[in-house]
Length: 65
Image (cartoon, rainbow, N blue to C red; front, side, top):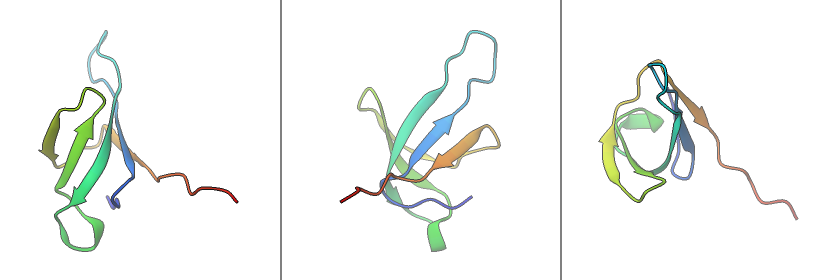
């Protein structure tokens, strides 16, 4: 997995009734964009994360001119 600052991690719920969560990558701590990442969730909570197979990287949208 590779991510950059500003990318979004989509963490899929792993059990019935658990909702998907999104987190913005605020710092990449591994070499060449690899985990671990410091992320900020929608509620403002920040944590270190080494995503598993239930996580998808969504590249940040580049602004259009």
